Image (cartoon, rainbow over the protein chains, first blue to last red):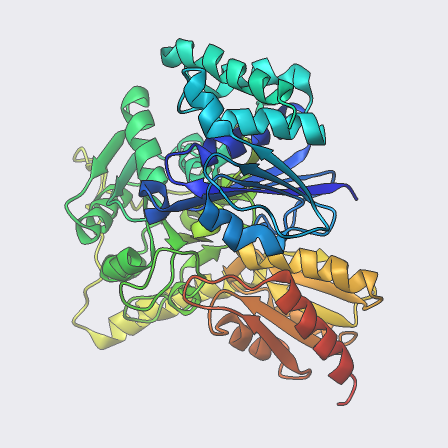
Length: 179
Length: 355
């Protein structure tokens, strides 16, 4: 059975839940089984936030990701907390402008992307999360690139039309990024 | 058929209630169920329904008693401490034979507890929760899709037997998103001649009341109610069997615990352990018959719960304690891991058969 477990983690306000939601919508459009589970409560108000996303060909058992195939860590506490939980052979995406240390595991593939720095330089300071999502798509092929526009159009409300283009741009930057 | 959408469990309950003809919602915010109220606040005014944020949980449940007395479909929702506040009103509803839907998206307790997911209101839900001899019809969804179907079903059953119903979920199911189809749901028509709708001077007054100063009369009301409960116990239990055809070991788990258990069952099957699951969908009436029948082939049971082992007692009762029962549980807002459940399945497999 093909199943992929993903965990997004960082500070509240970095768009952790939104990045997970973006991927979850691909599951919906591609007719895969998908679950999206956020941390809730005080985490959403500035503490550490995380979000579990599971893709599967079959009915999903637990929506709680305790051993991710893919980890996106947008701050040091998240990398510290979840590095060990990644399955051997898994992939870790690190925002290297916020996390100074390297991943110590040698049985996983790690990608360092200075996403927060790039986002600031490209005048989209709130979209480091989507740069990481772009890189994740590039390195995992987890979602079809043809769905990107469709998903953004669906989850960014019409009131924020300008943000649609910025989100698409951020994903494109991540897709093109070579470390 | 309607489109598949991604929705949070809490939102799915709210939309399903509206689809089921519920035009009245009274509530008071509490994590992790506030999205139910938020969704109702947005939708109800647009469809001519009533959303009202009451001044307290107690006020909200009493507003539900008012609407239910008129025979209209009504709902309230809360989370554990808030349900305790509603307990008095729920007992009055049961005593007045009023149908309504009460949603409990549980969090850790007792007391103010925490805000993380829990199933520790099992006793409260299945034994009534308030004072007096009564039961609620209790359903426990395990997916966002089931939150839709069971919400609609609970309204129908509540009206059929004139009992309050409870949808017992938890913080995980309330907060998670899954693809869901919100189709048209079946709204059953049941007798409402008891409702307070105005006599128009054409009939005798209906009386909705739970007070009687005559013990023999009050006893008779209880006996009549228990006749309906007996019928429910016969006709309304719901459950799902998973990989039970050749199972030596049977996991019993409801709601989110059953989802975690599925992972453990798959892992155990890969190791050659013949394990399956009976998932109660109704917690009251509890699916006793299927559990009792399973004792003929099952060596041991593993109960998985987000509490200290409350449903395990119902499994002991249902199986007449014929087989050993091992527990895999966590409390206080923690969730059993698939590894913990797997370990208990393997332990059960070791000790099974020593009867």
